[in-house]
Length: 159
Image 1 (cartoon, rainbow, N blue to C red):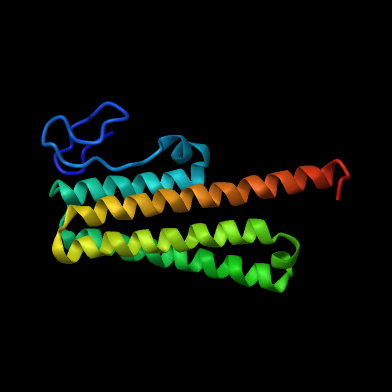
Image 2: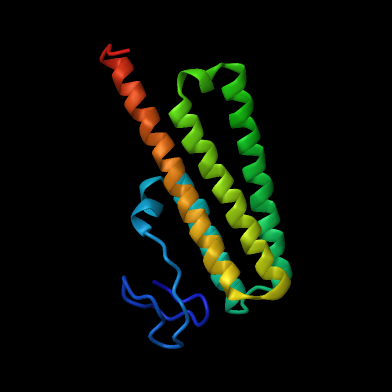
């Protein structure tokens, strides 16, 4: 686990940085790796958050990055909602839709928390934002799992 304050690599399972004693983010990276399109975005966000905390990029540049990421997410969320409603998919797959949209909401909340960092530079915003993003990622992974199971049942003729 890399410390967001000083950049020190710490062993997995630590709660505090061995170098500066900062609270380390609580992220289960097994979920980050499991879905490449989500993990790539999550990894870029995490890298940019570390860059902001370490002073490699300015708070203004981090704010621009978060705003662009938020806009991309908002567009995808709108497309998903519109498609689900027009195809009545929500009625046929409520568990999948609920998990997916809850994941999107967590992503949105996480990005807002990261944006709060740019206003006061409190590293707790980074920690909390990354935690919300991780939770969102887990929910989206759950929606994808439910979708795979439903497709599998359809393929073998159970539905």
